[in-house]
Length: 308
Image 1 (tube, helix red, strand yellow):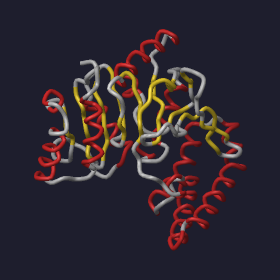
Image 2 (cartoon, helix red, strand yellow; image 1 turned 180 degrees about the vertical axis):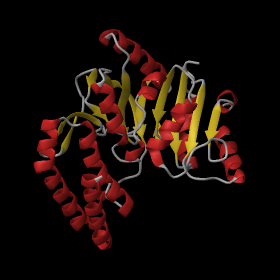
Image 3 (cartoon, one colour; image 1 turned 120 degrees about the vertical axis):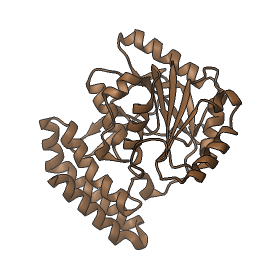
Image 4 (cartoon, helix red, strand yellow; image 1 turned 135 degrees about the vertical axis):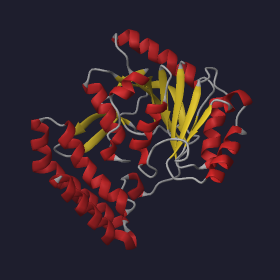
C-alpha cells in the first residue's frame, strides 16, 4: 500500500461528504480512507453514516472507506483528537499517511503534488521529512497562520510565518490540520494524549524536528480549511470551561516537556505570569456572562499545570 488518509471527525456528515468528494477526484488515489468518529454511535447510526458517506464518492473509493467507531474498533470515545489520531495511526498500513481534519477541501492534484514535494525535499535534506500544505481560510486566498518559526518563553508567543516569496519553509512546529509523511515517522512520534485537543499538534511536530526530521510547509500546495467563523475566545481556545482549563494547563506542560533549562527559567520567572494575565484580560473583556467560570478554569488549569 502507498497511501492511507486518516481523518478524525465528530461525525458531521456535510463536512465529511465535502472532504470525501475532494478525495474522490484525486489523480493519486489513496489505498484506504480511515475515518474515526470520536463520539459513541448506535448500530443504526453507524450504518446510516456509512451509507451516506459511500454515496458521496465513486464506487471504487467507497469500497476503500474504513469507518472506525466504538462498534468497530477498540478505543475510548470522547478522548479527542490526540487519542483519535493515535488510534488511526495504529490502524494504518500504507507506507505514507495523510492526517487531515474533516473540514477541508482541495484540488484534484493535491495528493500527487504533496508526494512529489515530499520526494524532492527528502532528496534535498537526505532525510525523511514531514510536510504540510498552505492552509487557506475557506474559499479565499487568505492564508491562515499555522507555521510556527519561533517561540518566546520570556513573553510567551508563537511567531507565525506567512510565506509569499519562498517555495517552501522549514518550520519549528506546525499547528492545525494537515500533515503528510511516512507512517513509521508518525508512529515513532505519537501524539501525547495528555494534551488532548490543545497543543497536541505543536508538541508532536516540535519533537519531530528536534529529532532531526525536517518539518516543511509548501507555499505552492494549498488546501481550503472550511472552518466556521470564530470569536475571540474560540481563537484563543478559551471559549468554554473545559477548553480554557486545558489551554491554561497544557501550555505549562508543553514548556515542562520541551524547553531547556534556560527557557524554563525565562518562562516560569516571567512568561507564565504574563500569559496568565493575558488570558484573564481576554476572558474579562470577551467572556460575557461566563467570564467568572472561565477565569476560574484558567486559574485551575494554571495551578494544575504548575503542580502536576
